[in-house]
Image (spheres, rainbow, N blue to C red):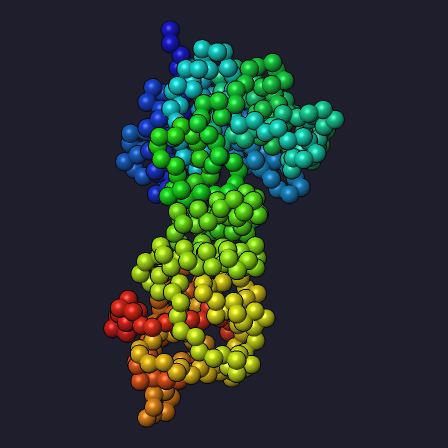
Length: 465
């Protein structure tokens, strides 16, 4: 009798990126039963109806976990839920479906580019009970070691792993569930405030029981894009010729920005990634104005004139449309006198080649303050302003002046939004030689970016839209 295998695609919401991750996952698991394990604790299921009609949907609200008597996290710090207890989805599943000899548990932000069925075949042939990425860090160097206090002897090595995608035999999955129930009893009996994270439990219990494990990398050409961070975009996925898994993969969102351009862990602003050219390679592949801009303004790039210019060159080479206009060289009026009227600790950042997203780099216009600018050149031009303020246009007027007339208020048009910044544009005719940005509200306002551009066809279209 042949082995019976199941692939468990875990999620708690649904979007276009998750849909494509689901499609890739299913493509590489043709011989296994496929399940979508969905956390519907919020009372909703976002999986499209046409998918629900054809797929096995295993609903896993967290109330089902609690009904088993399983503890969920710590009372201090409020860690818990499915993120912290990465084994809980499969614990619920194996209780309801113990007919499966092997299961693969996969998070929805994993890009699967490897045959899952062949890994099941190897596990059965070699009597392997668990496959995952082993973490070799010593206890003192692992951030979650403290969570194991009271359950494991921390004077001895605690086995650890990364389980974004992992494979278990039935006996290994049942052992993990059994030990979690025992730990839950121990936690209540002794009043323990700690609770071991799943990344320790799933590895340590299986190895301590003498079961055989295998490294996930054994089945891959590489795992260079598989870790808890940084986040990758789909356009960064390597071509399908390489057998691998990529994690985490998401859309361009706050999680991506924080992971790559704020958090300093193997990310685009990390010293090693900048030095070896990986940051520049990734930014060119992503080809997004906000990414170029944030990379340009990070200290390790901005303080190096060569690297700073590389970021600008890449943006001007690869961007198109309005994004290209915003990255282009622009016009350079003399701002020495004008800047004395406004406050900015880093005025050069506000007028830089690419916009800065840092709050500390913004320029403050106090009540009644104006920024007058004269242009010596000729030809139609466009003023671009950017800020976080969603109601920015109610705080200022832009007035233009030609040779023969006094200043007149010019219309301000919304240009686009890139992340936290909203961009606005004012088109001036060729006859206009001066303009002023004038604060008009009861309070001051902040600008992150100012650029004067020769008017392109795309920018000119603003005046007629």
